[in-house]
Figure 1 (cartoon, rainbow, N blue to C red):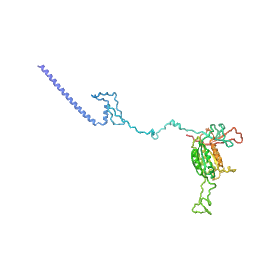
Figure 2: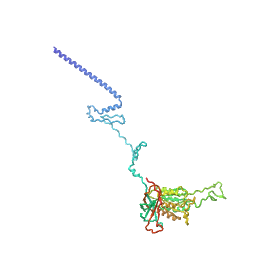
Figure 3: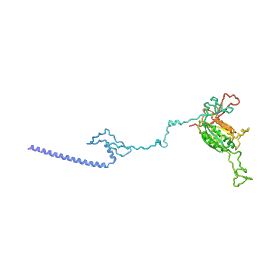
Figure 4: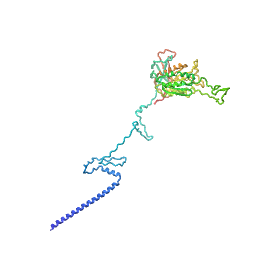
Length: 471
């Protein structure tokens, strides 16, 4: 009986234990469901109230977690080395696509139309004021920028015999050049002709008969130049004017000379200031017929600004090409009066730029002793011997002609002498001080047997003023 009762008690205890365990399991399940429901509600509320940045951080954290297994599709392998999300330096708030989705394809920017003729923009660097440092010059800039002291002297020389003809066939050994009395060693020698840059200066204030004589010789003046020469025409009387600009000898020069043919000079004799046919009108017994007419007349002031005209031509010639021979060709009666520039100032410009002056002198009187008389300076009449001074100092020559045919021959001879000269060159060792330097050229001709006078005449400039250093 006891045994039966113990077994019955054991079975009852097991039944009660099973019921207790079943109730405990049900309670635990209910509690789990409640906590899960509450956690879901809390996460839902936090998700709705979280800012976009929190979502980005949450999405970025979940990018490395693989998806749960799916019954429809096979599971995708997890990335071996998940890369961290790229940094956003510009602070953009755009969402990053999740790891299991491909990033959206960015649309390509539309091509902008370009102008092929427009050059590319220049890269300009700006620096604060005063803070820029000097950049070293490039090799190309150094190639085209240099400074050189000019110590090479060129001396054109004309050699003529006793008959006035050019002497040809001379060699460098026949010439001796002295600068300030010191013999120089020749480094350059040639007898080749040079193209000319010629400034023709016409005196329009001469007597009308002389002006008309010159006007009829213009065809011969045009023929004295070659097609390689360049010419400019100047005119002066009371003032200086450039009649034509620099151009090659040709049709333009011909047109300019044709326009000058009707020009007239001044009337012969002194101006009429009184008398019955004076500018104040007709008079009877020194009483004007018309009382209302003016009775005071001031004659115009007569001027012959030769110095100003030569200076104007010399300054323009200084700008021409140095490979040409520069010449001023003056056609005048030789009078100089009321110029602003002095002879000394004009001569300095000529000798600095190696410009020669040739001239044709008109209006001379073929009487004995007139050459000495015209060298006298009469007050209020100016100078009449200034042309030989210019020509002798620059290496040119004066041709005193009175006839039309003589003027035409002088054109050809003067231009031929200027073009066909001997050209000597030497290096001077004198210091660049700007002071005047005298030059003397001697010619020793072996065939000369005269002991009274030299067999040849040498025409060269008396000296020069050194030019400043060229950059």
